[in-house]
Length: 119
Image (cartoon, rainbow, N blue to C red; front, side, top):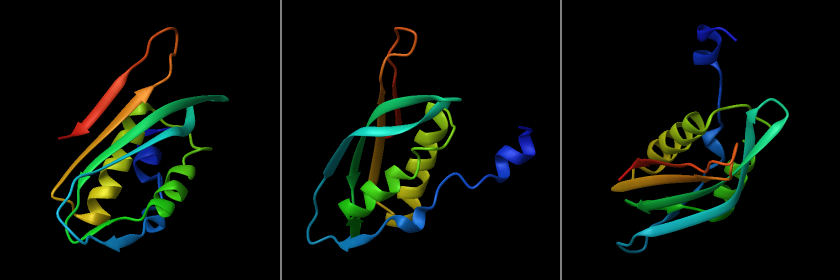
């Protein structure tokens, strides 16, 4: 796949993410142990994703987050790309006071990785 095609790809549909009013000032940490995608053709990757957010006026509706994460199941991408996409989408939709997204990977070749974006 050439560079121009990769840059023009639609990696996610962030319209799946829905909001609920944020009733108070709080920190919300969400963890999903079942985020899957294809890191290598025909070989799925399994990661735990942790979303640590201090929301502004709206926060993440959990059912929509589940549906949003499910869309990646059949996509081919790297750990770094999926981390960047999820971080960008949540920032664009919710405009949080702060956001940190962590991916904890299952072993690949005997090595586990943890990737963190934000803080």
